[in-house]
Length: 430
View 1 (cartoon, one colour):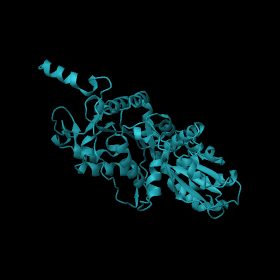
View 2 (view 1 turned 180 degrees about the horizontal axis):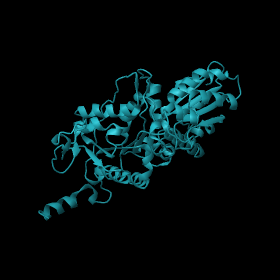
View 3 (view 1 turned 30 degrees about the vertical axis):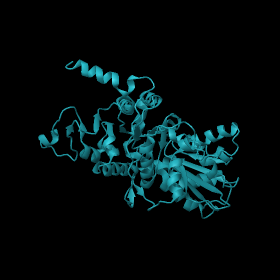
View 4 (view 1 turned 45 degrees about the vertical axis):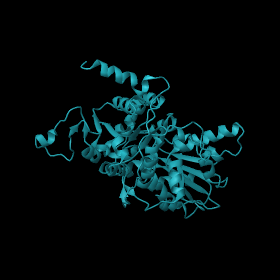
């Protein structure tokens, strides 16, 4: 060791050297996260463009971000970020593609100031790295904002490291994309089914699955602040969530481009997106059916609601952005009532309280149906959960949606068979 005395001085004065005296980094201010409205896009494409906007800027937040990926940097839309912010290496390394005149849209330039760490196909290493980088503020006195991307089904490969990273209160963002059967042509090996349930059950991890780009922008702006929070554990009496303590974030995204809803900015949308749900289509006073969806199946839910409106009264559409946060708030509010706070009410309880008792809930997700099936227990509404319980099919998105009953026609046909009310004519439910 060239300078042992200097190393020992650093080691004994580092933030983690004294029990209970971990360094509290002031963190980085979060700039406004916006997304220019596009007629049609996917949440994965929007994620890449938002990171590119940050990379082009000079915010303190962007300088703290470190991205990493297990051999799927390009296919998870990290390319623009990497091109601008470069790859990390301890010494400068030239771009081999340029050096050997190999055409490439990627710039593989390595530098000590680089902000992307490229991994091989090793998802366990991904979560070990996210956990370590997510503790930088307490170990080295400087907070990083680690962001990892991985094909959603392969979140399962790193669950042990993910669990212990959350247990240590590491702060990071994991982006599972693409996800579900919506990546249909790639086949069953790349289709995720149970990952929404992992997001719900993992402590220390707030899970979101937005359908639209504007939802994602709202969630990202909130998440970058949430990753840096270090408050007390008292719950917010509006949602009964412990948001002040902060934590890590899991985003489940998709490559399927869908039509966007246009510019939105009202408080109900902005706050509902963070709290876990908002009304995309308000139910009327005599509502007979509500379709509650999460994620990529939004277009089919909207289409099914339009078909139902011809025969069922006051149909509502509930956009769920986080089953995890809805469920956590619901169970926390119940615990508060047990302790004597009779006024405690969660976000999802307030949402569903306006529905008549005879209203049927239909839940839709490109994932395991149990993710949303519990919604019927909140206020005692009969529930028809629709989702994916098996994998292994290959085809177009529309082929697989029909196979698993997630297309609008299949949803309406199921409602015809399983609920009371005037049926939709067969030719309208196909």
